[in-house]
Length: 246
Ligand SMILES: NC(=O)c1ccc[n+]([C@@H]2O[C@H](COP(=O)([O-])OP(=O)(O)OC[C@H]3O[C@@H](n4cnc5c(N)ncnc54)[C@H](O)[C@@H]3O)[C@@H](O)[C@H]2O)c1
Image (cartoon, rainbow, N blue to C red; front, side):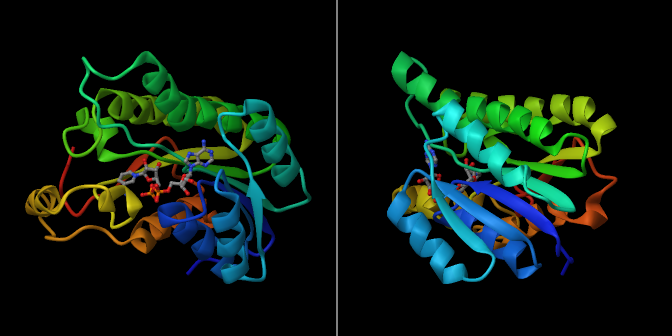
């Protein structure tokens, strides 16, 4: 348990799954959290269930102007530590030769370009005050897919890992750390979309013999957001049950 009293956070894609777990974990540690999602009804319900310290905001992260304005609003508030969690994403499983150019662009816009826009809006809003940026990547970004997601998804997550490292270098001098978590299969709606045989095959690939729970990924996000993680930057924290060890 870390003490995030005095911190503010924005978590994208926080209506459910990993984003919701991260938001709930940050709130438990005393952080004020804005949960942002395209799914307005569910994100409002999620913030209501978390209770004190949580607020909901409807945003489509592809709307870069609205996203930048939201980041500026949340991280521009008085605070001792400003946290941004770039978590919103869409999955794509179309083979390389079948994925449409529009679908490819959609995946890049949600999974990568939004994180870039939010990161530079955060750097501006933090204006040299301490910050933490955490990007939710994937094993797919490290090993080129193969688990779930094909080229579009894997490329977006590989790009997100590169963005993590490049922005960590550029923002270090301003007191902001930038890190990623790279989950393997997590028991969320993402995985529920897979057929039962595929789910069993996936479990067989995991040395720990089960999918992660969303709160286990949320806990990794909370660590990287903590004051205690102040010397960790540019890292990719694997949360994959031993599935990929490089
Ligand atoms: N579940 C897994 O097995 C797994 C594994 C590796 C990485 N991840 C990553 O973890 C993160 C969260 O995954 P999850 O399993 O919780 O997914 P999820 O589908 O349960 O939740 C994703 C959330 O993002 C929101 N979202 C989608 N498009 C959006 C947009 N344009 N604007 C705003 N919000 C939008 C959705 O409404 C949803 O609430 C993603 O980045 C995903 O790539 C998940």
